[in-house]
Amino acid sequence: MYQPVGSLVDTAFLPSRDIGLVPLSYRQPAHWPIHGWRAAVKRTMDISIALILLVVLSVLLPAIMLRIRLETPGRALFCQRRVGFANVGFDMWKLRTMYDHAPEQSRLVQATRDDPRVTPLGRWLRRTSLDELPQLINVLRGDMSLVGPRPHAPGTCVGDKPFEMVTPHYFARHRVRPGMTGLAQVRGFRGETETEQKLLQRIAADLEYIEHWSLWLDLKILLRTVATLFGAQNAY
Image (tube, rainbow, N blue to C red):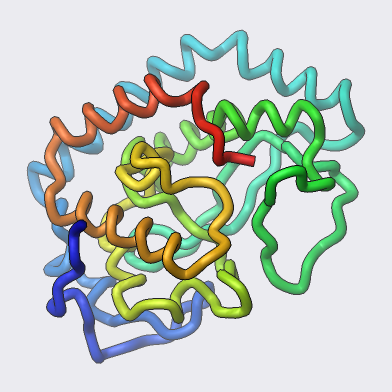
């Protein structure tokens, strides 16, 4: 398994509106591993595929949104604050999978198996990851990439410990744009994060992706995502 290297840890910090103190260097271009022509190629692929998918899904997405509205009262789309590239927050779009009147929590609580907040249709949308399709808009906006570390919501915890307190390597995930899918997801590290070990496995896969990025790696992850999409058992 990939082991994060010591050089990813930085002792200089600055405050962030979303997640408190973050390493200063992770906001500087010199520490962005995908830059220059590599970033231009990745961005071109993101825009091209996102546009094609939105055209192909131009009938399916409205149909799913209508079904959501018919099944339970409330909006079909919602946005949630996430932490992205260079530790900057953004609003990520999703299809609603929970009852619209689900009570607010004092801290973000991840969905669990048989979570009573999830609607019957929402359970299927989560299992097939179709609830993530509106993030194609985030890709076009430049908030996200098709492939990259999945963005986390500020305040997400494993047990009572915030994600960013589990390991000093956590913030290194934000040196690239977050993705709709990623190396961690195609390896099966998705769904609920009940233990610190599960989070560390995801972070290790994210950092491995960042250190070894190539266009071919992105294409392989996209193909594996499509191949495993409907067979995923650990998404709620």
